[in-house]
Length: 48
Image (cartoon, rainbow, N blue to C red; front, top):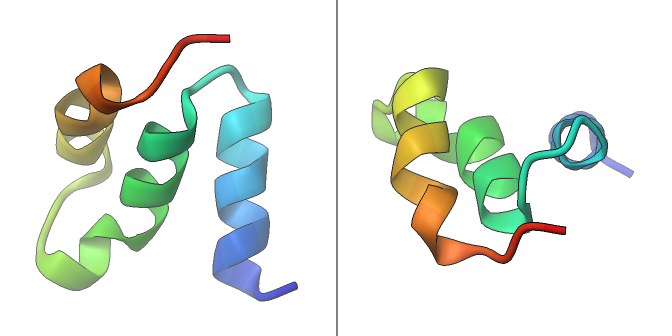
């Protein structure tokens, strides 16, 4: 598994939804700060 994929899984295990985990991990490549990515993706995924 790639380093970024492992980071996304770790974020998901911290309690964030799947879209937050993915966008906060890869968002920097699109100029998004982690906190901004977490907030933007909050409405896109289900809470577990």
